[in-house]
Length: 61
Image 1 (cartoon, rainbow, N blue to C red):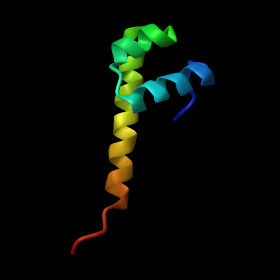
Image 2: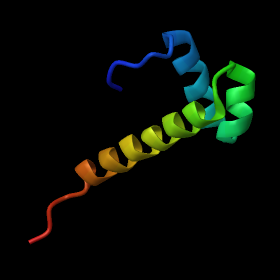
Image 3: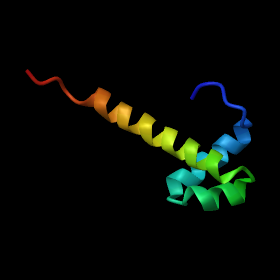
């Protein structure tokens, strides 16, 4: 991800909660960040995953 104001430790913890399937709101409470920050971070992770999947698809045509 691009430069973030979140510490690397908080980013790592948010990623672990994302992988485990926690909601952004519960992850925010556990990590100690604002719920909107966690929701934005989760959304950005989803976009990165979608982009990676799109990049791996073979070209048609």
